Image 1 (tube, rainbow, N blue to C red):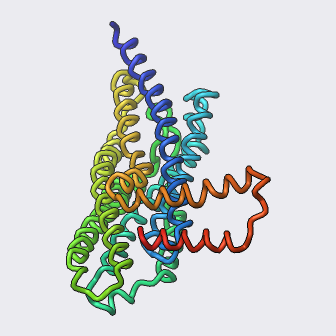
Image 2: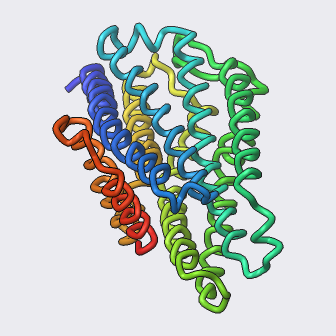
Image 3: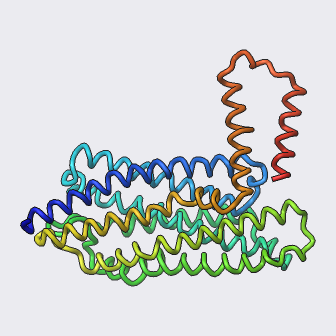
Length: 339
């Protein structure tokens, strides 16, 4: 087999791998993040919880990311990789949207770990320091920062005839190499999330000694365990792609070397799909490692969605007596408290 046919085969496999893995990840991502939004917005237990607020923002960011990536995948399949990949506008937009959603997701994970540390701390002044209103301010300010930062850095991406969509400005290359990927999108969220999730886990082990309502203690233990497992998976999935991005920015593979370019595209497709698991995995981690969360999902799907669907679809049951409605709501409230 000649070098040219081998490189063409590897490149075609990389394109097909990106296409099919993109659709699979999109399917799991939409289902998982939609169910996350449903649970964390419908259950009264989570509506005033700051950590649940950060998880909700993370799920919204993930859904935006998946809607964008699937659009790019469909357009690439229709018009071809050369037509989409050769557009300067697509080159910039792809990295701008990806960086906005990536930074938002990574730092919402970090914020949830920090929040759990303060929520489970034995000092009352630290527990009262973080409020839901303050959390909303922090989330809003950071999302504004992520948008401005991503637009600024993304504007330096251009199409180069030999290497494709890369950063064309020397200062931007140095910034991405020594600060953005290793620090802002790598080490900083990893360290924040890891340290504070471990501290929160340490706090929650001694939570029995504090005089707190049993519902609050159960909720703190549940969310701390969920956040800790999420952080572990987050670190494992993020590190390979960040390392690869630092390398490829400094040593881009030229298209004039077909075999090396094809192998580079295949490695990029594999590592990108691994990194994309970070955007779908939160719901599945929660449901695997938290039996209480499984009961909460069941409660929302059965008590909320199924009952509403029956109410909308079965017109014969539209006339519901007030007493029955009150009893239904009371039973739901009792179910939430018993979870």
